[in-house]
Image 1 (spheres, rainbow, N blue to C red):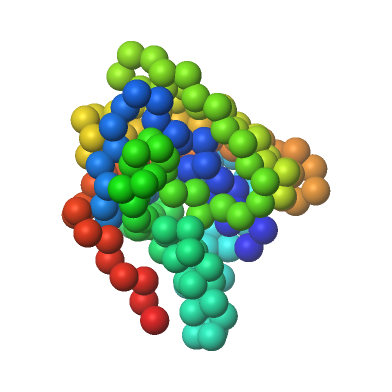
Image 2 (image 1 turned 90 degrees about the vertical axis):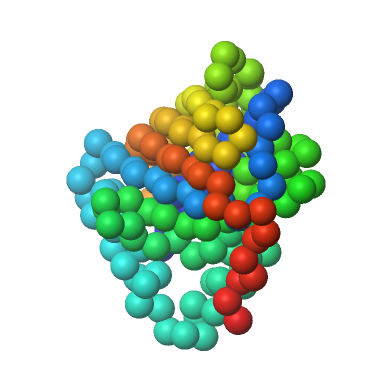
Length: 176
């Protein structure tokens, strides 16, 4: 499961400069690819572990994710990772997407035509990345990030492609 934070931290970099983000329930879908087949297999195995967690442990993880405005990631039909997230009116006012990530992270953005360039750095687990977000109005975006993570003790590279789409004005309550 040590690779799971790497999946989520890419959202930490996505703060929209002048672009408006609509508050409400969003669906985020990501596909990750590394140059290391072992890492790809480990990420898939971590997600499969999430799907087979004991109920008490799963509830604890869901509560932690819910505190950060996100749901548990799940494997999507295309081999990627999907999750739902809540963007509060306050987050929208700050042009911030949910991270689901704990730890010390900082991010920087530079508005460009149709989107923004983003970069981030986290200390726990050590990771960094840079990429670009492209907006389709205030209800959809795509993001491509090149990420370096040291979750397994040495730097590893991966590319993360994410799409986000707005689902509804009200956020669903996390499962109890």
